[in-house]
Image: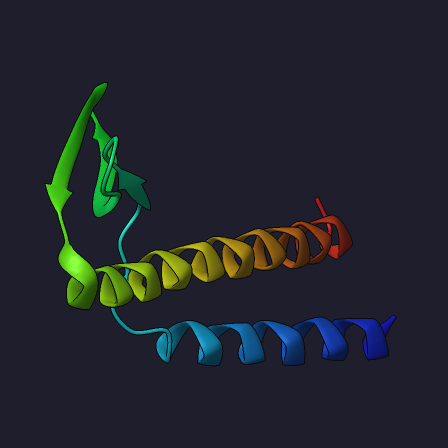
Amino acid sequence: MNSEKNERGKRLSQLLEEIQGIGPLMRGSVTMMGKRHKQPYFSVSVKGKTKVIYLGSNRAKKAKKYTDNYRRLMELVEEMTLLNMERLKQENP
């Protein structure tokens, strides 16, 4: 039981460390739009409305990195949630 506790604690520390190094992030997606000439755009839904901005090729790479960072952050948060749930289950009520 103590070894499980230690492993959870170590993993939580690793996850926190990774979160600190993630860098800039944005929720949303980079999509290609246009009938003849596809162009990169960034879109995000805010309060039920979709916001869209034109990116161009240089900003598209950066925006893609930011959205990838956001997805990784959400993966880390999910794993931390499960680990913290286990921690809470092990505590006395």
